[in-house]
Image (cartoon, rainbow, N blue to C red):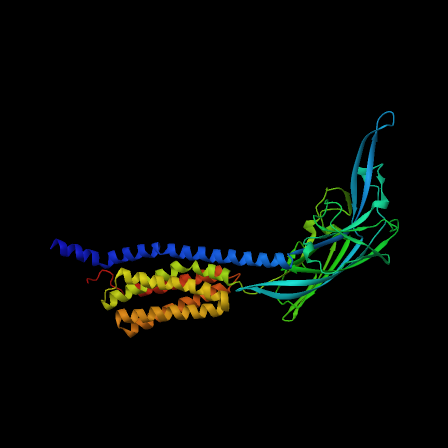
Length: 435
């Protein structure tokens, strides 16, 4: 009698619910492992992208030109003998700076991974006014005008695909690789201004062809900076500290225009040495790849516990109503089928994209669970309920994944409705019924 009582206790629905609830919690561990797999695939994808970017050209930032004039300041003693001599470079920004750029995008592939690269054709033009040498911190300085030079910052020199020439007042000036000083830019080109008359307005032009990846930015260094960027790429993201004044984005591409003045920046038109950093004046555009299935797959895995819990609840309801016993091991098989969905979604999505992968994976898992339910219960009505549950859950999840700003609101309302339905259904279940 005692053995029979223990057996009845172990077979009771209360104990079954405790066991099944514990299994549901333990099955969160495989979902965490699937998240780790997705992170590994994301890291591998980024490594492949970085390798392609290295070979083609990285994110490009173009800045300048800037006029640089070396100077010397001497400190005399009481006898007018030089006791200290300091050398430095004064930097003068252009009065006007116009940048017109066309980005020609191209998709590159390595294995299953795709990246977007571009060739940018830029035309820089503008003018310098006569440099103001009345800077208070370098009074009594001797300027070496014959050693003056222009610098243009280019973040990735490997991407330069033409032999640029700086045209100053109609004269072509020789361009040298590298920057003569690193006060403003770490890499770029230098143009000797020795033959240019810097005591009058200096007009300049430069054509630059650059290979780059994902992002192209320019720095608004003019007292008035005007930038226009165009491309046939239909999914741009405007980046930097300034948004375009005007932009047009269509299925055929985009056009964007910026206008920035020196009052919009946190540095003046002239200074010495490394007193200011110009990188905060960047603006530009990023060429986006529309679908990132890894991010959506990662978001979907976070709903794994919801799927497992709801399926377990429905199976317990069916078990109580039909008086058919379902072993905890069979519950675990259903849970693993639900977890396989996320592995299928990630692996198939790498080849066919997220939406089609979601359809294939959800149909496969729903069919598998429906077939397994019929093999256990031999009840068509129960199979229909399980199939409707799976279909509804996958439609709910897909809707949430498509939402951006309203994902939290939609998910919360959906979970509230699901809970209300379960509470209503539980009213018809005799949870204390005997076996």
